Length: 354
Image (tube, rainbow, N blue to C red):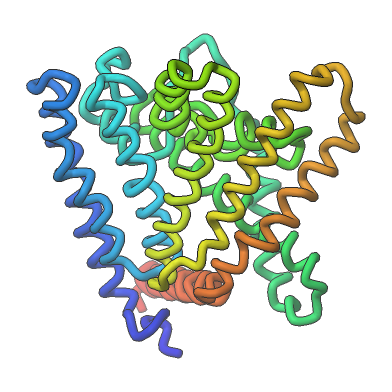
């Protein structure tokens, strides 16, 4: 395969050109949203003003075909940015006027999964933490060469570690770039999910924290307020949790469609709906039995992580494997590696006047 052709006939140069155009459109859209937020009162009028932008953000990822550029853009824009705009329409959330964001900070918070934290907080992870995860990711890339010899469970663990280490390093690099350019402290996006002692701990406090903090005010809180008047707080809370996981399932199905260009099978939705159901059972058991009654921390951690990995093996990973996500990702790694080698050779040639 030619290094410039990485998937289904699409060239790297063409993909990069489309990527630049997509992100220019995104930045222009957010500048419009920033100005509209200053001029249009919050509520339905501002929501109507944002509706063309929200619709555009569902369309833009269709222009990209790579796992990394397309997948990351879909996650940042179609999911997070659209939900942030929905909140901003009612002047709440990370883009609200309470944050007093300048245009550069508004663009950074809108485009990326970052949240400016109070100066009194200091949740930044040490550099060695990310260095270890960088080495882990590099090691996993080498281990993948032997995946045909692995047991399916071992391969599932490998996929899980790959996804986690890549996402954390990617989001941490975005946060670090924003920190350097804007001079603000940002909240971390992961909190060592492999140390989770329960599903509530995993989904609410450790895994992809920005997503949970976006889903809570956009889905959970409105459902809780509305349903409390109808069926009481107990059943309203249960329904709100299930609604939150259902919306998360829907957004994952949309992102997988961007990646695979195949109609969803529903397996990803089963993963999130099942986890929502199990989380509801866990919360009800804690309220019935009591928080103090529980398993030792080490046992609870092993059981929680094993449960997440096994259910991901059944319902989540098959959708990624269906669109050859691993092969496409490594092909993109190979192309980037060859590009870096060429750049180094050209630099050496220029340095010595060759």
